[in-house]
Length: 323
Ligand SMILES: [Zn+2]
Image (tube, rainbow, N blue to C red; front, side, top):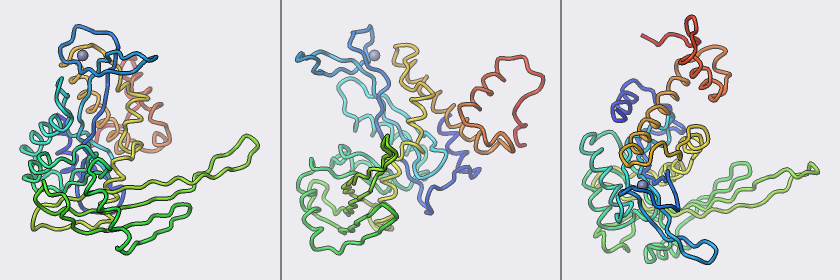
């Protein structure tokens, strides 16, 4: 059903772009919904050792990889896959992507991912599907990282200033350093300085400079188009845009991390139902509400929607669905 909703969203032109462009981009990310230090009767719990008051204890948790649209609203959830005990996030991520991409080979143009997906076998396998891959580059990938940082000295920098934000951008072009991949990757770097103001109790504003240094690898299908470096930075940032992606809202108001029943199948089903409800409610609020209702907060609207479901009203608060 998540797939069906996603396909309908595209067909019915539901998606609104958050910045002008033509690619369809999704982010692959991990989320954790359950954590306990007591052993329950569950075979699917993952476990890790954590340090508590100078003592190592075992913590049990459930983790999922999620594929979600970015750069558009609503940020539709495309698919979710549970991590099995002992496997890496990349293994679960690959299972999810292969399932989705085999069924919907042309739905996406690009996928953005975290640094630990930057592994040659994972990337090689995924390249078969003809997508652009945008992966964060961190120091763990030492050679490529060091080469990229070193190259910045000899490549012209492009500086953009927007009010309190300064962006230094380098398109480092194709690099051959990542030998295991047996092909070149493009690297872009963006250092962003922003003055962030905070109002003190005495009414004065204190400004602090925040600097973020981002390096991304872009691996594109051979022979195809090469997306503009600055555009790919926008894809990368869209992955971090928690507010538009809904994770904050889902945790705060939708109890994403509540475990209704500690059973792997039930937990996955609840998560999928939650994603479906989130997508459908967002679309309903965005498209079906008119007039005064548009000024209500989503929480207030959700409350009314709930009342409407359980109370014996004459008629409904809500306008009729479009036919
Ligand atoms: Zn469990």
